[in-house]
Length: 368
Image (cartoon, rainbow, N blue to C red; front, side):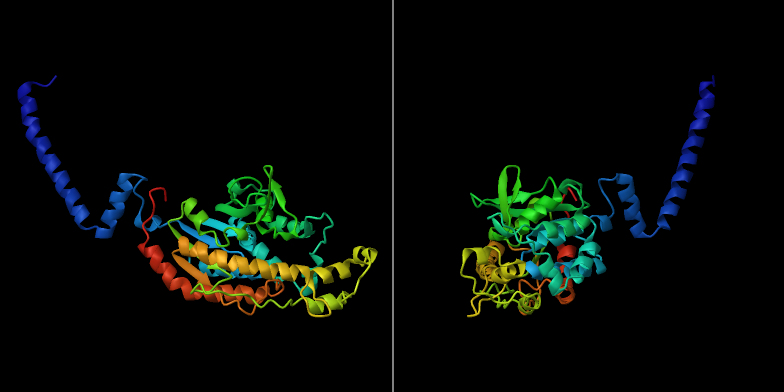
């Protein structure tokens, strides 16, 4: 052991050494850039206080209904990505659920290739007429192609937070599908009443969610989005009333396939008039110019959808709305994907400055 007088001699030496070390440390810190001080402080504080660049708001995107016009959603997402904007939360209704589901699964390129490859004849070939009595089309062929992008994945296992909106048949309740088979949830969301067969999920028969929530802003907020970008395919920016003049562009294709107007009077002629005759009655026009069943239903559905979307968006407005100029695109124009994707890109480019401002001004939530 050291004697007490020896310890008393060592104490001043230790204090002098500590002062020199502290002085040297201060000199070192004074040479560091002030921004580096903040990064160093954030790192020492632990993961709870992440660097400023990581603490951005959680972005949600609500992809609206609109039949063939939904291919413009592809252009919207592609353009956002080119500007470094990648939504964390994706909610879709009807065709918005189709594109949104593929995006959430990391396969936007696959659905883009599918859409760009559609011609008038191929669109008609996807129309598998159903004789079930609950829908004109079974939707099996379309499901097969979409399954290549979605696979057998569950919603909760997708790359991004995702939800679809559907409508319960008997009650008219708005159903949010946030768990379970992703492909079945998407099918339920685009099952247009009378056109596609409804889908049964957990004992409930569901069809198109556009009847209750055409642009699902509320779903994005419920899933934790700090700011929401809405893509509205039906109304305009001023929420004025609109009815789309949707003269069926497949008319000439139906005639090419031999689906000429027929005056089928007998029951057997109507039932066994052939596939082309059935498609003509469903999607074509009569000799007197009256619309086919599907066209009339889509027109009526579009009128209701436009008014519902204006009401919902007024009650829960998004932070930014992207309105593509789609007035010349019909609801059955699925073969015009090239045009629609470019229209989506153009509309997004116009909205980028506003989106960037909102991202800069919106604080990140505590959970972000």
